Image 1 (spheres, one colour):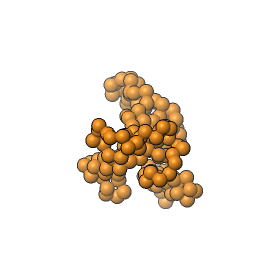
Image 2 (cartoon, rainbow, N blue to C red; image 1 turned 60 degrees about the vertical axis):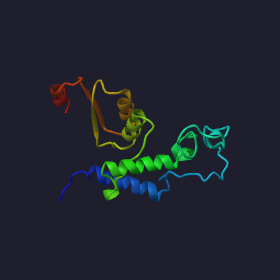
Image 3 (cartoon, rainbow, N blue to C red; image 1 turned 90 degrees about the horizontal axis):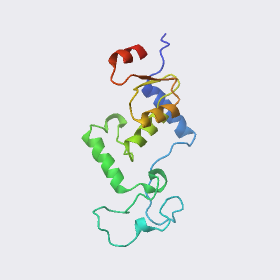
Image 4 (cartoon, rainbow, N blue to C red; image 1 turned 180 degrees about the horizontal axis):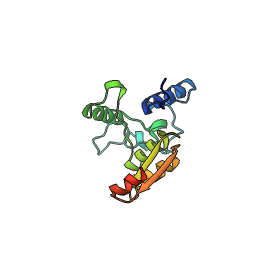
Length: 157
């Protein structure tokens, strides 16, 4: 009988199932414009203004706020679909997720995916978002090695 720890994918799937079963799983939605928006930064309603637009964008002229609460648009979803197709996703449930910046991507991924049995090992001069995400994670070990120093990396591992 094997006592090996479950793989990262099975741990992630288990956590996702738990979130769904406890109604903590959240999804992006788009507003059809029929609701009054009390959840965004668009307190003047300018994002959906009928004022002619100079840009080529469709829909609103701003995100209004968090995509999860009120800022998701067709343009976001179309770009994610394009990235999914371009980079070979769509197979086995893989898909792309658009972040505002690399900082947001690092913070989001590193603070949510690693668990107590995981280790994060990073170059000492990597971007601050890597350090912040690792500090926010539940990883059991966070270590750094000297910049671009493979021998020091070996020591840390």
